[in-house]
Image 1: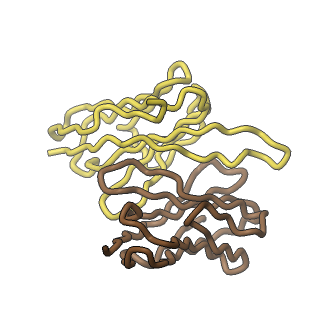
Image 2: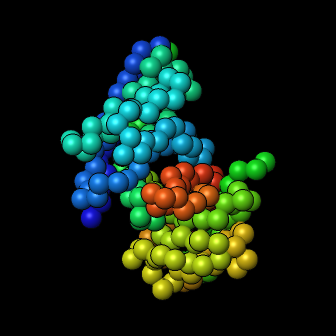
Length: 114
Length: 120
């Protein structure tokens, strides 16, 4: 069974600093997709970044980048130059290439300190 | 607004009543998903549709739950004889999935704002 673990329920970062959110997953599949979603308070979930497991290069999206370690089944999110608008709950998610379900972690609540 | 919309945004009901939620996906999307999210947890998959066909249902979806997507566009999720344990945020997401040589495409899901259900 696929599981996604986010071991940091809460994180905080000073504005303009860098923070890394951790995510590990368990799977026996070799081909899959990984995602980070952001859910601001009382607002809908939006995609931050995605990674295809067959690609060795880490995905980047402006201030957001991932450290994808396939052998270790680790998929961390780095937010550089943190902004107040980055404050939200962040969910890591997994989907196999052939499956149809997304599996989400329990989330990390990020606070940005001015 | 061309995003995913859900109605109502909030629903308060008494235990034993039936409720129905609606989701309007992004128009060209062929997949539609329903999730349930309780406080402090990530979304849990309930079911999904490919066009009008309901292809998979989670064990979380008891026989009191039914979902439809009659014309492959909007979808409804009905809960019959609601229980207090049904209180949660119900999220809808849509995606456009294409078959590629490697299998299904990336299938990025776009979420709606959710319907918060409170069962008294």
